[in-house]
Length: 430
Ligand code: PLP
Image (cartoon, rainbow, N blue to C red; front, side, top):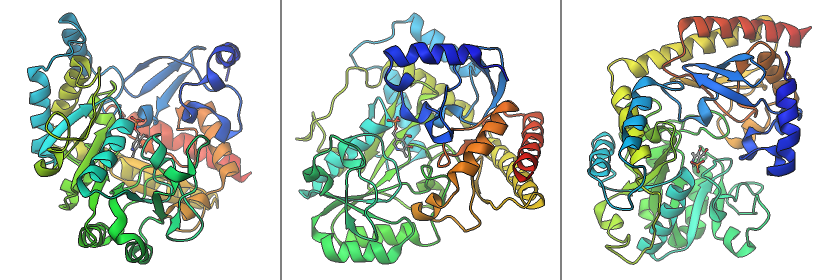
């Protein structure tokens, strides 16, 4: 495959953009390095790069593009909105309409505020939980990514209930020490953390189904117990549904599993591909937010007409009957084919699939938490990624990311991908 132009642009990019990329997860460092592919155009389930190569896209821009690229309804909504001016700095009726749409799909979000990213939404729910409870500590699960604000860039310590060690330079130890990190799906560790710090915990941050060390569902009873223990201790439960919101059905994991958090953060899909975030929850908690209450949060671009219009159009499409069932069928078909091909070629994998999302781990052990996900062989993944790429299949360049199937992936795309997987595994086995 000729990627000369990508390589040339990458060299130019390195001179002017740090690391050549505007988000580290776009770089190819985790898959052997070198130039990432520079894309030029995208339509439906396909990407075309600057050298004219075509790819079937399973990145979906790390999640938002659930309808595929340049979807006509979203495109039309953006064009129409832009003709009326792109930013007002005043309220608009569309924001109210969209907030009502979100609330009717996710009723625990009684009151909502729009922001510009998932990072902002999470950062604010944490501040709000602290303002509401008067406590400082945050409990989170190892390996779960909640954006790049200081508090949540604290990942795992060793062993359960370890006070956090920052995962990034520039985060004061004083901030990291406010974060308690425990393994996902581990109720003993949760109980231990609550026993130890219960009266200091403002909130627990939960991906109700993990998307950030691959796709990892909660084990039966886990989410219920999180609610029970944290509420008993007087803390709040925050669901990070930035990935899961409107991904698996028209709502969140909370509405699918019928479990309510106190606060919810959304992003990605609800902007139809434009920048957005939203947070919300019970009115008595949200009443702490300015101008109603003492907790400050603001945004020049928040609720801008383009993002809101794209989000409304996207959700209207997602409300079509049978849409999520179809995504899940495609996910299942692809997952079964990958498992079978791996078995035939004696490549040890564990495949977690949920609806239209899946992750292939190069390990023969089940993956239910971050430590188990870390056991996935990075070199095997890099090989898999490269051979798939050469055949025109674009996966996220990290062993921890999910493949996202969109409504625009055709049966033909899935068949083409299955053939590429077979070829890739046979190459890896030889
Ligand atoms: N929360 C989760 C679960 C995410 O996956 C992400 C991004 O990948 C974020 C928060 C941060 O969202 P954003 O990149 O829009 O700031």
